[in-house]
Length: 62
Image 1 (cartoon, rainbow, N blue to C red):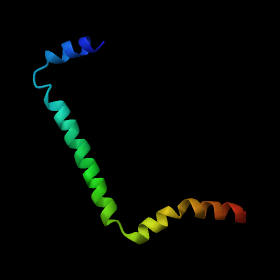
Image 2: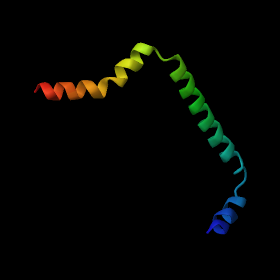
Image 3: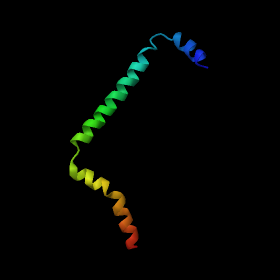
Image 4: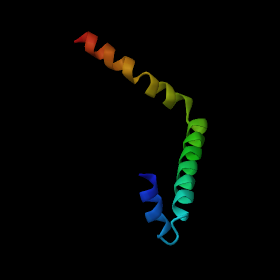
């Protein structure tokens, strides 16, 4: 199965750039996500972490 895919990909000019582009996109996304997590405000994180608990409290009151 792999030999059929590899054979077709060898015939495409410039195909070696696609793995590098996908790795770059992957790396940029996770570095950006890491920076966002580090710089996120603590108040926002507390609000978001308490959302599931607030939903249960509202359901119990009804």
